[in-house]
Each structure stands twice: as C-alpha cells, then as structure tokens.
Image 1 (cartoon, one colour):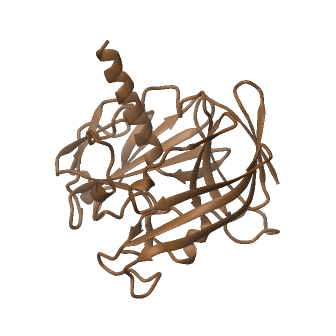
Image 2: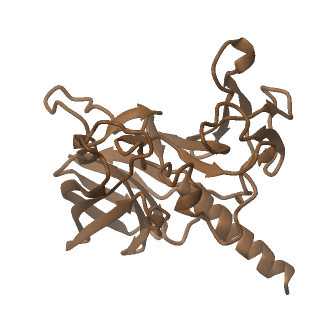
Length: 306
C-alpha cells in the first residue's frame, strides 16, 4: 500500500505494515519514498525468571529495528529501550526527520497492562492482525509544531535520565516490572511539583478524579491545530488542579500540582502524548515533546545571553 503524506506545520504520526510505501512530500515539494520491509525486536538482558511475567522490581532491556529503503537506499533504523538511549535523536535522512516509535514485535515478549501503547489492528479484513510499525515524520527544516513548547514540568537541567523514570524503567515502552510496556513517560519529582501547559490548549479537564471515586487524578489537554491535527496531552498523579476545568490555557500556565496521588514507591508524574491524524489517534513517545522543550529552552537562554 502507498501512504501519501505531506509536510504540515505539525508532525505526522502513522502506523504501517511491512511492504507499505510512505510518499512524504517535503516543504520544497520534493517527495521522499520510505519503504518498510521488515521489523524485529529482541531482549538484550532481563532479570525475569519467566519472560512475559511481571516480577516486582525486575528489569528488561530490549531493542527493536525496522529495515527500510529510504529514497532507494537500504537503511536499518534501530532503537534500544530501558536505557539512556531511550531519549534518542530522530534520524535525519533525505531532508526528513524520522522517529521510529514502536514495532509490534515488542509484544512477543511484553504485555500491555500499564496504559495503551500497542499498535492498532489493521482496518482491512484482508490483512488480519496488528500493524507492524509506528513512526513520526517531519520535514527536517520544520519544527514539531509552529509554537515554542514550554516545559511541562521543571526540566532537569542535565536532561532526562532513565534513572529518574520511576524505578529506572518507566520511559515510553519501558518494561514495567520487567514485562509490561509502559504507556507513558514517568518523571520523578516531589509532591507539589508544578505542571504547566506546554502549548496553548483549547480545552483541559480531569477524565478521572479521586473526588468521583477513581484511584487517581488523570488530566487531559486538547489542542486543535490549523492543519487539522489534534494533540492530546495527558498527565496523572496530580494532587489538584490550579485552574478551572474546561477553560483554555496559554502555554506556560500552571494547571496542577503533580506527583501526589497513588505514586507507588517513588513520587512522580506520568506524561502521555497522542496525535489525531487522518482520523486515527496515534499514541507516541512524550520524549518527542520534551526534546523540543529542551531545544526551545536552550534557544531562549541563548537569546537572553546576547
């Protein structure tokens, strides 16, 4: 199948199968062809006695890859999850940035019990099963969105560290208890840590709340972009909101205090990110947002120092 996409002011997220061809039109009008040939995943090391069975405090490090042809050149995109390499740079090839977010082979040895993160089912009955790869693409000359992305929480000055993702496991798709892919990014920080809107939001609200009988406070922020895409931002473990629900927020506005409800063994906030693109809600790595936050903070500081 040929999947046609073009550069817009916000990044493109999609899920595809082996044999699919993405034809991505860059801002200059040139089209880059990306053919997905095969995907695989394997465990590098684990402390599990039984792979696929959660054990409290167990650790699993794994890798996955996709074999592709990009503009006719054979390329292997390979990632490691559960180490510092989880906070990776996108590949830049033929003028496009590519983030390889996930492959379905991960779930041969991982479960999905800690928030949704698995690839979706194929729409066509002619091709049963899950889609094979999830990725994010953007013209390398274009930001992930046309606005500055403010810190979602106080950013660790030296960058995100895998050691500070709950017990060192809860990055995006990291192996919770060694066996379940984590559907978000956890950042350890104390109860009461302020959380801010990273971008302007059209709407925001609690979709779960301890006040209504749920075991956690879970928040969602929504942004509709002019290119037709919708971003959905999620955070969990907040003690309380600091703004009324269902009101627009400007980027940088504090909306909650985090890290205070049902946090387990380490006080932390949980962040998730999804993009509604071409009618499909694609869940992707919040690191893509945090990477942009760090870049924008660096640029802001450089401007202040001039």
